[in-house]
Image 1 (cartoon, rainbow over the protein chains, first blue to last red):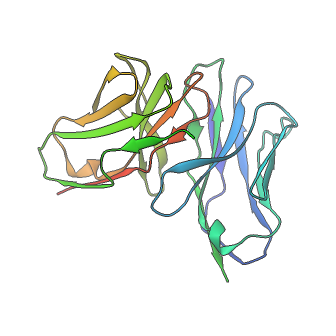
Image 2: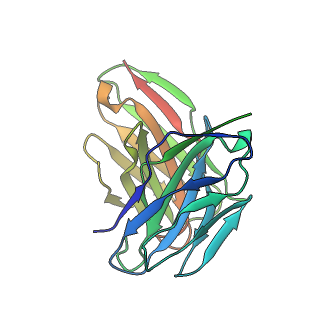
Length: 113
Length: 113
């Protein structure tokens, strides 16, 4: 079945450091891939998405490229800020399977000044 | 902007009480979802609905029921609350299908004593 695996946290970085959060997936069809972010005390917000292979999603300085050959959708940011401290969720959807989004377990990022 | 609202941010109930969690979305979305979020377990889908009066079980429906009498409103019901239902409950909606981008409410933190 479909599944998402993302790196376990917490990830602790200093301000302006480079961020990578790994996400790999298993899917039988042609999924769309998402990154959601959850700031403290809030619900999830869509950060970026990609709907087909080699697409790059980007938003707020974050990027992720849909890599079909490695079944990955790693999240990157060149220079993190304290305000990026949050929980990040990788997710996939499979229209052909007709199922709701499947989420990874989340990775907590903590950025210190 | 899509707005998904949940009736309470924090709720404290006693074991055995009947609990109603309400969710309203204002963008005429067809699909609505209820998740619970627990540390280390990520998001787990309880129920979803793809139309008024229609519902489908998610991964963990036991101990829960739902109601969707109007398109904009999706209620989660705990018939007899138990301490293991203490959790963060998140509601979401999507427009184009259950696999489409989801928009989340701020969450309800429920404590069952």
